[in-house]
Length: 153
Image 1 (cartoon, rainbow, N blue to C red):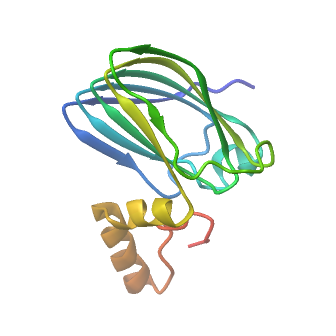
Image 2 (spheres, rainbow, N blue to C red):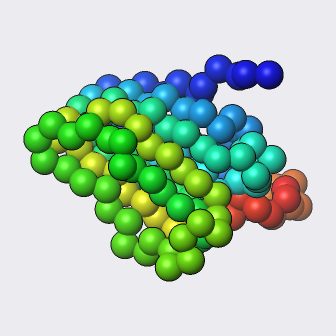
């Protein structure tokens, strides 16, 4: 059973998909002078086992990926035009032990930032979505899940 990829298009805007927002393992991200944040830490994505593939087409844009601690990010098949890079300051030393995130496509003067662990949690917490999630959790008597999608609501 093949499912269609989740398509995200951002043009001169900021787009955030945080928390338990999808179960898909395939994504298409098209950005032009935009910022997009994708939270890939949820155990619901591919039942927590499948590898993730992200097809990108970035034009002067930034894609921020919030990934689990042990995730291995493979960006070797990216085509670059102009400046840019993949910033992954906390790449795991135990490569091959976590979920694989494969990034393919084209980047024209853009970059991809990988956030893990506490930095990913802080990136999610500094958002309107997190404030709304905390208010919902307080009102309904649950716990917020945007900062840590592995929690159950």
